[in-house]
Image 1 (tube, rainbow, N blue to C red):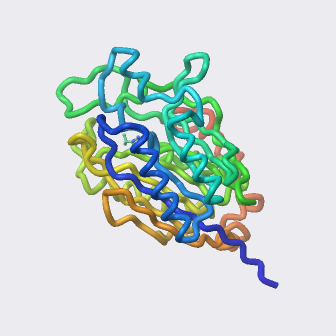
Image 2 (image 1 turned 90 degrees about the vertical axis):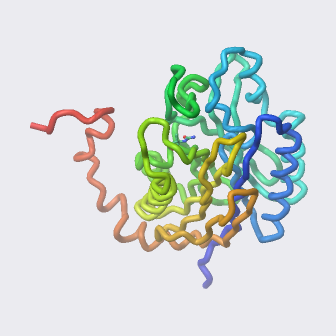
Length: 311
Ligand code: CDV
């Protein structure tokens, strides 16, 4: 008997989106990559965080109208509908990150998971918001996610898409082990995410190469420790002179990178993901039900920051 279960999984990395680029041109780029992904066997395509706009948290803005143009008041909406239509036509599901403005005026850094028939089957609102909310001086750019977004209120949930259990997160979430563990405890098989990671760290003089190596190590370690596939899509290159890392990847539950983008432009990478690969880890070394000892993990939910040693 053939027990193999596979899923055509693609990551559609985006090159820069500049301030002057219209949403229509951005959506046309996404559609082009969706077609490319489909031609390479993809059933699900992962797009980046805040895929429809430039990474606007780098800019200090006070004028509400100026801020609002980066937010989507409905999803889909007339500008994004062509992407939903194309997904339906091609029979491809997708993950998309965008800035969400709710009907009651709340703002989130959001991602959705969309079925091949165009229905939204899952929504995630970013929980780990990096950066600051004040206007910093003496830095080359801002990182104002704490000003423009609220902390997500939907938790880390898992959704069924194409008979596969999908977890979602966004950018900085990928660096936190709790993100993946909460989803693997719900039997997630794939975690999908988008990111915008500036090459320069405005908080300390971090060597540039570490921006890529800490990105990769976070994905690889957490894929292995949770026996998951991880698919991560960058928005990268130089957006109006502000450079962000590329290195979009698909990581197997072994922790190995099985596909990696080579450019800092629009680029699709695709694999046939064997969903059984994680099974040996789930049965043996990471058999959660057998080996986890939550009675000794209490501090993880009791403490936020590090404190005194236990008595
Ligand atoms: N968009 C992000 O969340 N970026 C962060 C940066 C600020 C470090 C990241 O973790 O990549």
